[in-house]
Length: 281
Image 1 (cartoon, rainbow, N blue to C red):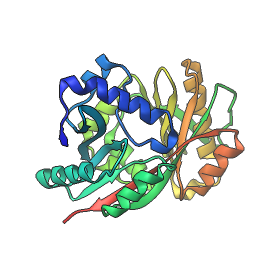
Image 2: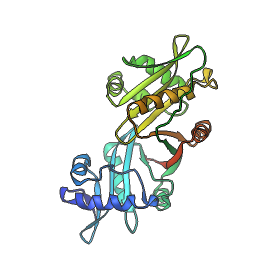
Image 3: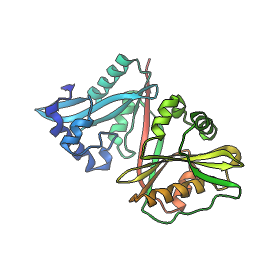
Image 4: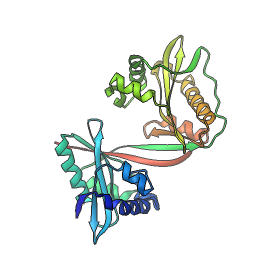
């Protein structure tokens, strides 16, 4: 039976999440909390699959881009179809045109269920990590890298639009949303300037377990000069100076040069997550 998550289900959901963590082939985007009290405060809505009084499945749907994103589906046995059918109903209720799911690359069981339900793979995101170490690399002559302390949304959007090849997510944000995001104490933005004009950027998010490069981009006319490499070096220096125990970077499967760079610099592959999408009527 699929039904709404209740407060008394939190212990069962936590056991389900721990079961998922035990094997990479079960992994999918899911709540991060692994403590009952924290999980109670961070899980908002969602549905559980109950069998014999036990929580054996979970899914939740949240707004994402112009559609919805799934946490899960995560389930122990049988089929994920009832959980995915719930997601379809949520999409219809909210008027979402697309649903996204994010299984681990090795989660073949879920990938097959998603395909059967009409989802198609879009791309794979690879996550690489490194412990603190010297990644210094000087910017090329005439290029300066500086921390952005007072964001101008128009400048940011122009640079993001110029340097981004595939995604336009940030361009849908309002100026206030951009200012609020980059005013957070855990978010840090650096620009690379050439002749006084911004030509590249790196966004760094810091936390107790890791610092993560959320975005790294360079405008096409100045690529191939080492600006991206220098931006990465500046982000790493800042992260490790702040005490980050490791630095995480990401690259999509079409970003062959970035993947090659991370491997060449000694980053270790930590994770590979697929993005699936289902277009709705």
